[in-house]
Amino acid sequence: MSEVLVVVEATKEFGVKKVTLEMLTLARELGTPSAVVLGGAGAAEALSGKLGEYGAEKIYAAEGDEIDGYLVAPKATVLAELVKRVQPAAVLLASAQEGKEIAARLAVKLDNGILTDVVGLDADGTATQVAFAGSTIVKSKVTRGLPLVTVRPNSVTPAPAAATPAIEQLSVSVTDTDKLATVVERVAEQKGSRPELTEAGVVVSGGRGVGNADNFKLVEELADLLGGAVGASRAAVDSGFYPHQFQVGQTGKTVSPQLYVALGISGAIQHRAGMQTSKTIVAVNKDGEAPIFELADFGVVGDLFKIVPQAAEEIRKRK
Amino acid sequence: MNIVVLVKQVPDSGADRNLRNDDNTVDRGSANNVINEMDEYAIEEALKIKEAHGGEVTILTMGPDRATESIRKALSMGPDKAVHVLDDALHGSCAVATSKVLAAALGQLNADLVICGAESTDGRVQVMPHMIAERLGVAALTGARKLTVDGATLTVERQTEEGYEVVTAATPAVVSVWDTINEPRYPSFKGIMAAKKKPVQTLSLADLGVAADEVGFDGATSAVVEHTKRPPRSGGAKITDEGEGGVKLVEFLATEKFV
Image 1 (cartoon, helix red, strand yellow):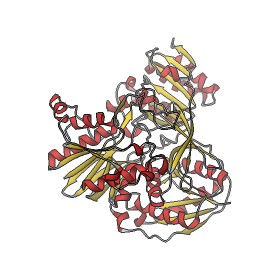
Image 2 (cartoon, rainbow over the protein chains, first blue to last red; image 1 turned 135 degrees about the vertical axis):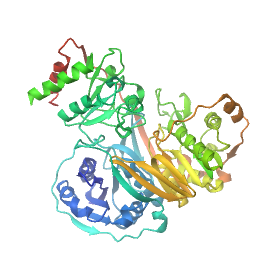
Image 3 (tube, each protein chain N blue to C red; image 1 turned 90 degrees about the vertical axis):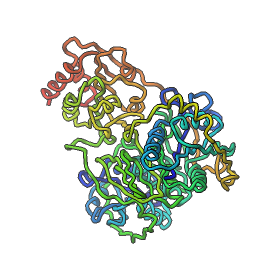
């Protein structure tokens, strides 16, 4: 079976991201998964255990400052050389900012089609995408080159399949043009041990109804009790209640968790665009006519400052 | 500084949007078409740089005839002129081909700085800035929430999942911006009147030296096979809190195995 290249998404703090495990699971349906680690020195070694657990038969690694010290371009150059050499059946990247950017450059370098926000991929290369804020399901295909797709987090259930991958270090030959955008500093802002918003199985979001930044503690408390991530509507972010990187919606993150809890969110189309493909939606809002209730599998009309603390207490009791 | 802002006309994301049944492209005929929201932040950023450092701001749009409305709207915010890449053969172009056309146009405009929105609200594909930078062999500083210009040195704070990165490059460069970077100005009445007289140059594929079979459906590197509307979600149980709302909420979560 042909190789399928999976470009690994990982963080220093938490290691291999869940979307990587989803991609490895998907890749096993299409061929033999090989993980590609493009990062700082020692990254592949540190990640190899987890990658093997989910079926990576091989790990290609390009590491060091030449790769990691510049924005995206060196990674695309290394990946393009690898693709030309191994002629994989498909290349999978995460449908997040960097994955899409690497894929963009790869598509131009190889004059190859690209499909983003893919939620499913058949063996014949037909991809399923969700478009227009989850309202339209699209089947599409790359018609020039190999299937180059970016996979949306929470599209596939990761399934382990043990393998013991050997690491092959790739010789790095990046050009001066790849080194035009220098990364001077990386600053972590996300606090605590909450799962990342786009990958979380549970997301608890607050909106304008939360009232102020301090009250977001209520949202955080419920999120922590449910093991979830915290999100915020645009109204809440614009009002300064919560930082922008947690914004869910048309101009923020798209999430598709098992459970989405909307607190004090009216459900404007801007917000729905980012969350309406969630499996189960629960809403609390004082306005019974709020459009969020049209989506909610369970809605409570009332004061969130009474309902949420009571719910938190009830969860604690049951634990 | 010679700044070019990429502006895309998109169907209004606040209304129902569809793909066409005849050729699977975005239905622009029935939709209310507007400037891609994120592009307004790109225009604002360009105008701020011009105000601080001097230079000229040019709008570059690829799109059908009706994109003229969005070009005039963009000009009413304050840019100096616009270039409209207009050619019937462009209909059905994929992202790879679109980047080829835009790069060819940018090659003629000699920009020091290209600014665009981080993504469009229709495709949300996010690939255009890097595709263009790759073709032009210039730096791409993408996902900026802050941009600083110091002579020919650009520094951005790039929003990431974990926080942000500080990334720097010399011009010429492509910068893409999120909506956290500024607050776009509203066009003034004077601006709206002035926009009607600002030069809008139309370029065809022939003007750009791009062959018709490199773009459109003929040149596409990917194709939509089929599309269907997802059935709208229907609301489930809705209760009014009468003192036990929190408990009932948790009972629901328990039946769904979340608690």
